[in-house]
Length: 445
Ligand code: SAH
Ligand code: SF4
Ligand code: F3S
Image (cartoon, rainbow, N blue to C red; front, top):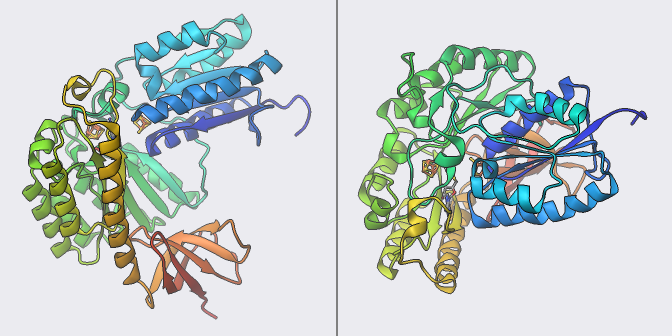
């Protein structure tokens, strides 16, 4: 690193939304002449992009702040900025201002674009700054971006969430739903394709309500059809789908759009209709089961993955058995499982029938064991097949081993004499493990 070169380091917690926001923060810093630093200790600007979805995310952030405090003591001129979902909550920013008063800049999820200005002001006026918005009319367009990968990219299609599931903090930290226009999304994807991107992942807290209440006439399925026509793009993925809003038009798009990957992440949260109602999810166990059946009959081989919360307030042993029953019936390709975590400010935090921690853990372990068994059986069916993967790069253990994903989002580690990073490659699957597949590249001569 040439001396005098200013550097930055960004640490990101949370979901793809946050990862993508960090790519924009990096883009803005690079536009100001900063370069990424390999290690945090020596970076002139340290940014921590936070997540608040569960209590352990909050705790990890405060743990990190303790470590960063030591860095700030050694390098008082280095700027420490904190942003992301935690900063949208007053009790958090109050704590930071009281107990971590050495933090230089605090900003939120709805004013990312202000970061360069805040940084300038902080540097010139040598003062602590905080700017958090609680409303945003439109998604900010055209921010620069430092993409993590050359050949694949996230694309925001909407921000915010209107669903107010009773356990969830996201509607409070990301605000109300707002959709970008299909024209600006497609234009961004055209530019990405021209820059070598082959796979796009469309991001929204609930992509199925894309375009609701907007001043244009295009729904999520319509948007996918438009993106399917963009030359150079080979794969389209999206995250996340709320079961209550999944339309027949989206199922038809799966059938018709060649580039749309055969994978749907469809968080169910619970298999008990009573608990689903207390969660304000607005579908029933039966409704979810028949939705999955409909998707599978239209798109055979589609991978279905999910999120499940264990130990929501009032969850009885019978309710939990309903979740186990749903899991056995749906046979998810994989699932993220979470222990219910109280989030201050959400309705469920005030429910009195909280489940004791040991009981949550017992149910959690039982569920995970069943889910893993199913995941292994699902993966076993891939042994012997040849699958097309988009290659992510060398896998850590061994220099001739690479990893990539099938269109059904299965992780494949495979041997190849040639570096195929960023390419679509055929891989003969020789072995199926619980969480990944293993194989050999099939190279054309
Ligand atoms: N918008 C996405 C989910 C965002 S949060 C969707 O609706 O699908 C990701 C997952 O975190 C949720 O699906 C849920 O399973 C989990 N989650 C959210 N709040 C939680 C809480 N308070 N405790 C435990 N898990 C939670
Ligand atoms: Fe949270 Fe529910 Fe919105 Fe997902 S749909 S972000 S779980 S409130
Ligand atoms: Fe976390 Fe915010 Fe995402 S709370 S999960 S980073 S939307």
